[in-house]
Length: 126
Image (cartoon, rainbow, N blue to C red; front, side, top):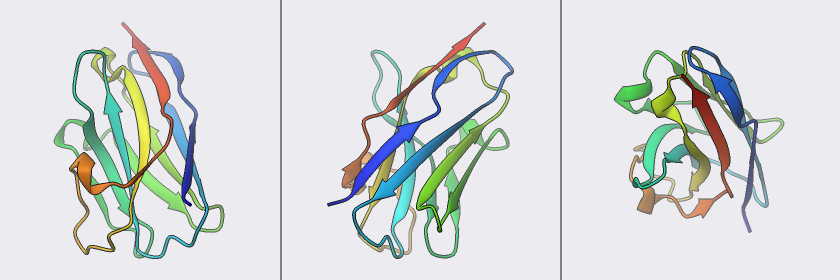
């Protein structure tokens, strides 16, 4: 069974940076896609970024391009989300997720991801 554990959330001022980590365990991840999503109070969960374990191809939501970077450390089976130039509207619970479908396309839809972490809170103050 796949287990995903996020860490690295916290309180940061606008313009600051945070790095989230997602420690993955339970099986070999082959060509899984590993995604980051976020959910703000009263809003639907939305796609932020994703990366393929094999090859490292990435995909980003338009709202975070140029500010957020997703990466992975295969040896540590850990996925990272480096968030720079944070804005108050980035405040949300951030979730790590895994898509085990082995599709060549990196999905952005939440229903494509079948494993989820518990989430980590990111709060950006103005």
